[in-house]
Image (cartoon, rainbow, N blue to C red; front, side, top):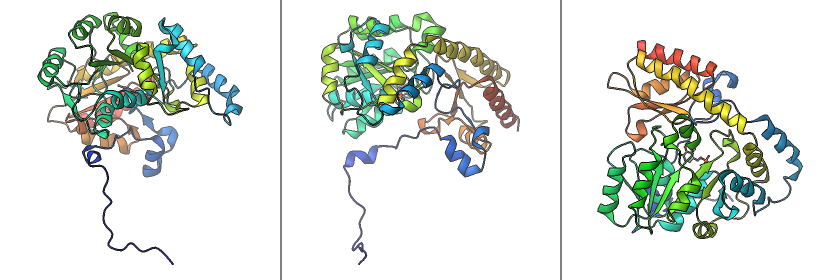
Length: 377
Ligand SMILES: *Cc1c(COP(=O)(O)O)cnc(C)c1O
C-alpha cells in the first residue's frame, strides 16, 4: 500500500534558517550547456574566479600517481601538506588547520566563537559565506555602511556594539576587488581587544602583493604580532585547484587546537592533499598566472575608460564594473548568459554592477566584444 500524506503540512525547521539566502555559486558550464544547447567548449565561464590557465601539469602528474590510494582513508594528520605550508610561510605545522576549502575553516571559526549574543563584523559587501555561517548558528553579522572596506567605520561599529566576536577583513575583497595596506590593517588590529578574533581572508593575497607590495600581509607577521588573529588561504584561486577543495587557516597553536575540536575526521581527501602539496612545488605556474592576470586586466581597464564605465581598482583575479541607471547589470548578465558567457551579477548585493573573472586572452576578447555590443545597443 502506498503511503498517503494525510493533513500534509510544511515541515518546520530551525527558525534561524529562514533568514538565510542560499549561497549562489557561479553557474556551472554543464548547466548552461544543457539549458541553451551550447557546446560546452564554446561556453566562457568568468564567474567563479577560477584559474583560467587550469592547473599545473605537475599537479596532474602527482595526482595520477596516487589514484590507486583512493580506497584508503586519507592521512588525517595531513603531515605532508602542513609541513610544506610550514616551510613556505616559515612557521610550524601546528600553526595550520586544513579544510575542504577555506570555506570550511570559516565555518569552524564561526562555530567556535560567534553566537546569538556575539555577532560578527564585516564590510557591507564581502564574501557571502561569513554571513551564511553566522546565521546558521543563530548569530548574525553587523556590517559597515560602506560597501568597500573602511577601517574607520570598522572601528566605529566595533566600539558601538562592544559584543563583536569576530572581525572579518577580506583583503583583497571579493566581490569588489579593493584591498588595504598592511600598515593600516596592523594599526587597526592593535586597537582591537585581545578577545575579539580578527580574521584576514587572504584568498587573493598573492595577487595583491604582486601588484602592490604595501598590500602584502604575511601570515607569520600577522600572527606573531597579534595573538588574536587568523589568516585564511586557499588553493582554489591562483593555484588552480577549485575542484579539489583545499584551504587553510593559520594562527597560534592555541587557536588552531580549539578549531580542531570542530573538524570532522578526514575532511580533506587523499587526492586533494596530494594536489595541494604538489601545487606548492610549482611556484612558476602561479607566477605565470598572476603576471598574465594583471596584463589582461589592463585591457579591461582600457575598455572601461573608453566606454565610460566605472570600475573598482582590483587587486584580485577579477574586475568589478559599476553601472549608472543607463544600464541594468541583471539585463547585461542575462544577455551574456544566453550567449554562453557566464559572469557574476551583483544585484543580490544591492549593487548595479557585475564581477568578471579575468580569463585567458581569447576569453577576454570574446567577452569584451559581446559586452561592447550590449553597451552600444
Ligand atoms: C574563493 C574564496 C574563498 C575560499 O574558497 P575555497 O574554495 O572554499 O577555498 C574564501 N574567501 C574568499 C574571499 C574567496 O573569494
